[in-house]
Length: 221
Image 1 (cartoon, helix red, strand yellow):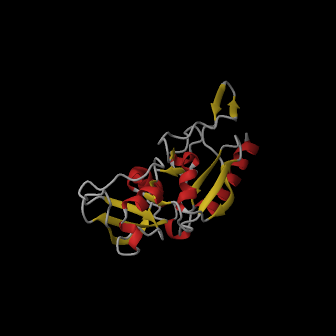
Image 2 (cartoon, rainbow, N blue to C red):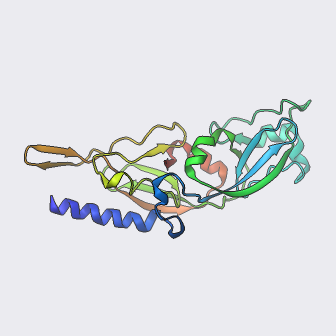
Image 3 (cartoon, one colour):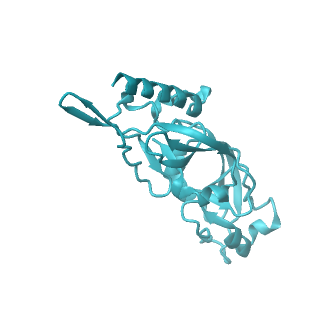
């Protein structure tokens, strides 16, 4: 028992170094890790508010092709579904004219809530956010997450009986219980529900590559 608790302590300390940037330390474990640069756009015609991962540009005044229906339908897709974006309801040919409204950082949690409003460029360059690959040291669960998201490593009073508040970006389903270790103390047994997450690699994918991994992308609340 003492050996296992010591192991947990080591893993939690390791998690601190890997997942929590100094400027957002823990953030109250409330999904407030604003670590993903994004750009906000509005369509001049239908007033559709959308977002892109910085530096993806869909501005109508940036390139002539950005105002063409065929180009938009062939090159811009919905982050959540991978489908072509919906056409503009106010334009005769369905083409949007997007105007840039601002740029700021957002949190992985907010992206999870607004993913239907994110547009991805098939030919986009690397995004400004870093994406990590992680694995559970115990059950070997693997996934991706935005660097700076604490992945609920330190919430819920460190209670090993409660599974991390970690959600899948595509399905919104909560991460399954780890459940690979059972603590036995006298007549009482406790299944360890929390995952012990460690980072295995990191990179800066394009938004389209990120969309391709959305079913394996996770965020905390």
